[in-house]
Figure (cartoon, protein in one colour):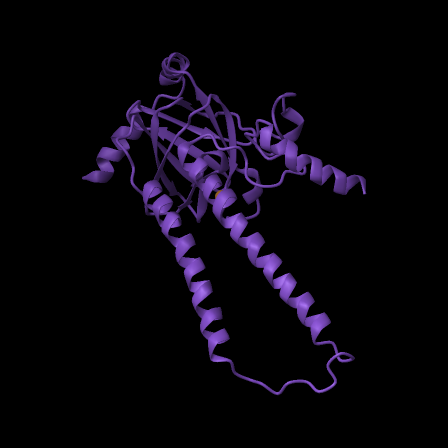
Length: 270
Ligand SMILES: [Cu+2]
């Protein structure tokens, strides 16, 4: 009983609580932090859910009605009817119309996600067994991002989600993400931004987001990639432009892409 109450109350709380990561007893999506995710949540909450609820209630009503109206005691001589053209046309047409009503806005959202606006910055995420490597090609920065073990966590860091080196991006800027993998399939996914793309060895997928709120956002590898699949989280810190510039000047030294790597690339390209 206590659990049921908790689920019900968390449903109402989760709407208002700032959720940049999964919460206990959470229902529904994490709070959106980008326009793309807001579209998805609106589509789900305002169109899909009402349709699903209406269909469920209608089917439940039909079942109850059939159980009562056509029970054996009240209906000793059952009908032998097998066809009814009107009903058959209706139960084919109405679901088709419902699907069309859902398809049109859903394609709109898909198209919007697929069209990358002019990017303010580009980051490259490379999946490895089992961590993520990041590059800022325009800044000559490269670093790896490992999950922090449970024993090393700070009080404010969530278990299985925090990493040692976070991706840092400025707020309200279009970030283009190039996604690939080095060994097996991985997937770069961040629920608050409505972003999820497969990381495929030998191929570069791309997606984008524009974070609208400062904060720390968490995601996970979302393609089963081996024994430590659950231990290669994604952390993105969204900061102000000034903080981003400050971070850049620090990591340009700390995570500078080494010359030797560039030489290697030159030799390889010959
Ligand atoms: Cu993975």
